[in-house]
Each structure stands twice: as structure tokens, then as C-alpha cells.
Length: 384
Image (cartoon, rainbow, N blue to C red; front, side):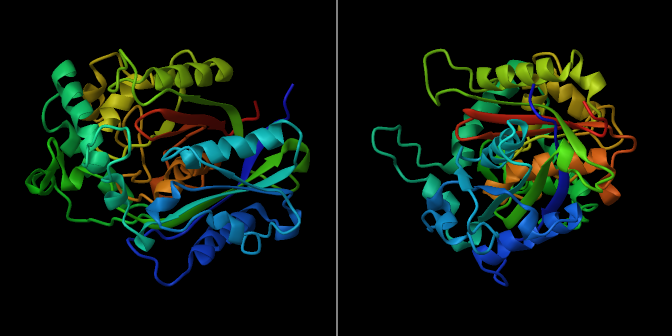
């Protein structure tokens, strides 16, 4: 039997378009110090450090972890880097949890970050990769055809994505760390914004952010005085190739399989009824209804109905992204870990103004690459 593991410390930075006030080292340390303070621990209490970030070319700094042992208190300790493209924040959390659950370490510091202002991620994603199709269209250009396919397959109203964009930006107003703070956001504003990659408008896409997130994961017998841990109930990772014959890019099999394992290990038979709140990786607004179906919260072709009915609002029956989500803050390497961290804050009752009343079981979700990497966890206020 594996060791029980809990989140006992959460820290994140203020997310912004450019954090010119700190170096990359300062950014990760800002989040780590806050996580340690939340856990009531010092650097000397940490056994190992696990870090994650998106591809190095996004910032133009190769293997920055080689220079971060001092900044993260890892001198003389194991320092491990995880890499699974945009889902890396989630995968980093799961690798760290495995070190605790496997009895290797008692307390592990997890840190994920991105300082996108150091380079131009959109330009990087437009390069033609040898032996690959020359999309030259960035991430939005890659995902737009899948969104169009979803619209045609499901018959979803054209304003579904607009409503998601407004909902998440209004939620972000309750989150002091969120990058985008848009108190005057309206559906008309989103609808009138520039069409970037049809059907994705400017205000239906995520921002480019600098930011970091950190967690302290602790074994049950090392909790100390922590009174409100977020217990990890279950976790799962899955992957699939970007391209293969018959692949369904609208509803990837790896995501379906990942959720199925997560629910099986967590004893979940009716996710929409049993899970109180979910932080889902939604970089383009249309991915909310698409993931509702992929995760089993809605029947196939009916995810958009959850958005249109208000079910995914903070006061709905399945609140999605009360923090404002990736649509409001997107330091890519940290975005997945932020979803996991926000889920932990919810079940600890520490989410502040975006707290969902009575949340006891929460999901964190991340995906990356061309929808080929998936990482998820369930955390609970009750010990499993």
C-alpha cells in the first residue's frame, strides 16, 4: 500500500504580462517561500525539489534548473525536472506525489514556472519543424480546426465560447493573483474582439504571463501541526501520439482513459455529482465544453449545455475554474500546477473570494502539447 500524501503548503506569484521586477530565480523563489510559509516549514525541512516548465525555447533559456539549486534550497538534495509540454505543471505535481507515496521522501517541494516575457512563445510555435506539417499558425492555429469540428459535431451555439470567456474573467476578479483583471468585460466586448484563428477571437484565448506556483507535499507521518491538509485521493497520467490514423482530436482517448483511471482509483462513479469543483486547463474558451465531455461531466455533444445553463458558474452545480483559470493567467509551465494548487485551496477552505461553499472534493486537470499529455488529480478535505 502506498503512503498517504497531502498538500500542506501552496504558494503562487502575482501573474502579469511581464515581471521585470524579478529574475527567473526570483520568480520561482517568490512562490516557494510562500508555499513553505503556508506549510510552516523552512528550506531545511524539504527532502527533495521537483521542478517543471514548458519547452526551453519559449524563454530562450536552456535548462535553467541547472542554475536554480541555490534559489530553491536544493543544494545537497535531489533536484528533478519534469517535462510534458503544457501539461508539465500537473505532471510535476504527480511525479512529486509519487516520491512521497512511494516512501522515498517525506516532504517534497514542487515548483513550476514560466517567464514568457523573456522570449516570444507564439513565434516559437510558428516555426516549421523538420518532417512535420508546416502549420505556421501557433497554438491557436493548431486547435482552431478541432474547435470548429466540435461546433459542427455538437451543434453548439456560436456564443458558447463567448460565455466561457466572460465567466472566467469575472471569476478572476475574485483572485488577487490573476493576470487579467477586466471588470468591464461583457459578451459584446468578447464578440467584437479581433478574430485571430476562426472561430477563436482575441478575448477567447489565454494571455501570455510571467508567473510561478509552488506546493509542499507531505507524508502522513510528517504532517506536524498542519490542521487542514488537502489529501491526494487519486491521480493519473496518460499520453498519446499527436498524429495517428483515426485519432479524435476533439475528444482524445488519452484524456478519456486518464479520467477513467482517476475515477476508478478515487471511487468516483458519477463525477458531476460527486466532485464539488474542478480547475480545468482551458487555454481557449471552447475547450470548457469539450473537456466537460472528455471528463465525463456531460454526455457526448452536450458539454456546451453546461455552459449555457450556468452549471459551470461558481454557483452552478459543477463550478469550473473559480480562480479565472488559464484564460486569466497563463504562465505555461505553471498553468497545470496552478490548477492542482487551486483545487487544493478549495478543499482546504483557503480560496478567498473565489471559494466554493462547502467544497470537499476537487479536481485539478492539465493537458499539453497537441492534446497528447494529460495529468489529473483529486484532492479531498477528508483523509482517504
